[in-house]
Image (cartoon, rainbow, N blue to C red; front, side, top):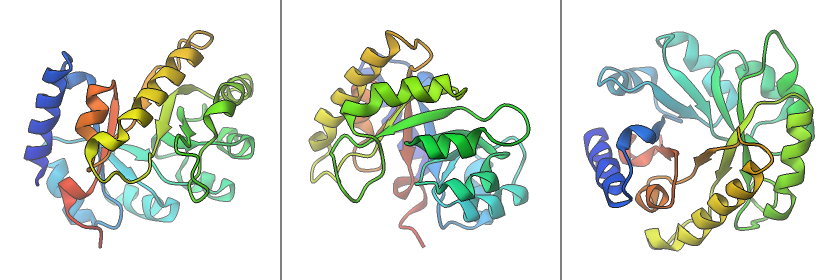
Length: 217
């Protein structure tokens, strides 16, 4: 696949769902990819890129154009928050109070965050349990964070449709939380193997790496 093919598939999935492609943010996940490879996608007009390691993002960002919107999509240790806070457009992986405290620290208003929800209750994955998501959202917002939506990484699907129940569950959880917090509206869900299903179920952000850049280095 290629960047252009992904754009085309996004448009077709949006049309099937009665949505506009412009309402879906494609985050090109560039983890392990060198700066020159990222620049090739940038030169096609793309501006939203994602990284999952704090040190890697901190090293790449200064070498690339200032108008890139960096999304941090990986697990973030509290003591690494300071490395990426100033360059991050959106943190996708907020999942605990200690990280919130580290993210708030620093100059100016902290960048907005998504609450990561572990929809599959997988021990090896980060994220708050669905049952605890609403209460943690309350606490994060009370502490001063801008929580603008939810994020999930479902179990790896054998078929794209295997992820659908997780996407539906995240959307329904978002609807419930947004009753008290209307600003919690974004849904970051869907990756290379299932982003079209995610769009059909209401994703506003999809995170695609392998389909754009090829296998990670």
